[in-house]
Amino acid sequence: MVVCEIVVRGRLSPRYETAFDGVTLAPGEGTTVLRCEVRDQSQLYGLLDQLRDLGIELVSVNRLPGPGDGS
Image (cartoon, rainbow, N blue to C red; front, side, top):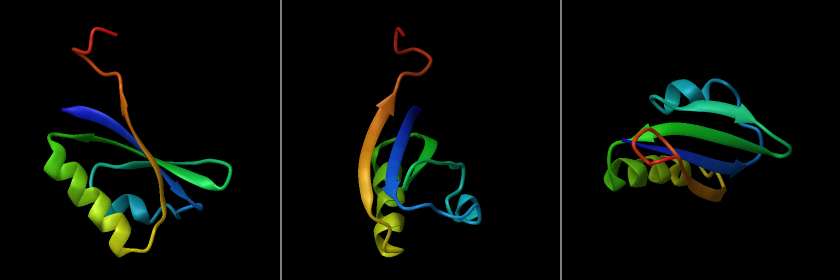
């Protein structure tokens, strides 16, 4: 598992947490940060596809240090 942080433009309402299984939302200044664990790239691409299909603008995708990363 890899922990990812996905930043999108705008503030998403809390109801999106149920739309994206296993994702937590953290509102920021004009953005929302989605944090989640993904098991592989195909799961990540599926989440990114969902964001695209909903018309949500992607700002960045970052891998966060997690257990076993030596951090």
